[in-house]
Length: 140
Image (spheres, rainbow, N blue to C red):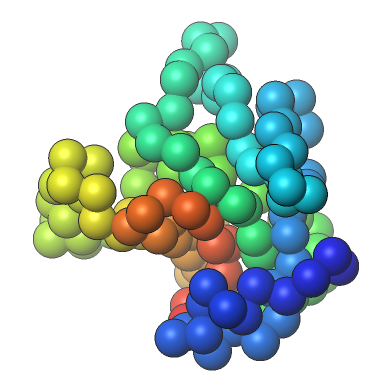
């Protein structure tokens, strides 16, 4: 763990946030000692440009531990790619509309990905696009 990101996420009371460096096969950009997601994402057999900047990508300790215990940590890369391409996952129509508007007006973006057993992972990109957090609903 490099450092905590509680300064950015204090309103969500995320006490332990781990910088996510597990995006395989993707260009990584490093600025001022912080790793940022950059580059293109695979969508089927096509490489597609992301719709927005993910900023600093972090994952809560709880999300990381739970995904590792479930043997699903490898899915984080896929979920991040889907999020960056505007595939918001399992959201209700109002949240889908809010995300589509957020692409135009620069508001916060939310994706929710559900697994077969109703386990859910959220990905939130801040309005200023400075950071993207991978978390579980109970981490919010």
